Amino acid sequence: MKGLWDIFSKGLVLENPIFVLALSLCPALAVTTSVVNALAMGLTVAFVISTNNLVVSIVRHLVNPKVRVPIYITSIATIVTLAELLLKAFAPLLYKELGIYLSLVVVFAIILARAEVFASKNPPLRSFVDGLGMGCGFTLAMLLIGAIREVLGNGTLLGYQVMWSGYQPALIMILAPGAFILIGYLVAAFKILSERIEKARAERGETI
Image 1 (tube, rainbow, N blue to C red):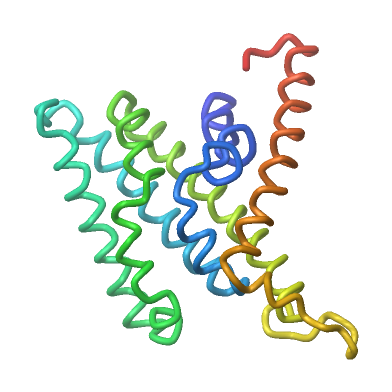
Image 2 (image 1 turned 180 degrees about the vertical axis):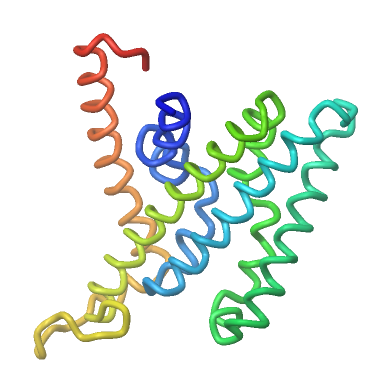
């Protein structure tokens, strides 16, 4: 269990897809204007990456290495299409809000990267846990960005007013430049946090 927890937890901070690996920044800039949109995109990516990791791990011995990338992309596209259909059927308004960015999940670098780096070389359970950890790390990053942008840019959180009545929203925060600046500060904060975690592990004699 400790091994599985190590695989899962690394995606939360030490190898966070957005704040550490700097992968799939497009949705972090485009759909994090509100917590709801950020959560929906985060959960969608978590579902796709964990499911795809499982599929890739199961078929890894059956796939010719020369055609592995097209196989991985086909798997991702199929799972993304399923996620789109589910959202369109059960949450049409959210589906409309996310728009084209749902389809772009197919080419998110983090999904293909985990399939290539981890799932293609590990058994199904470990691969699924790796995808789940990366997906949760991605979702947490999206939520953090979305919450800060919504509060500062609109004065609301989950649609409810949280700032005082005279608060003047910082409109730049609901635009892409504001998101880019915010992500820069959060990357720096996660760098500091990662270094402290690694230092604490080293002092305890744990393998990093």
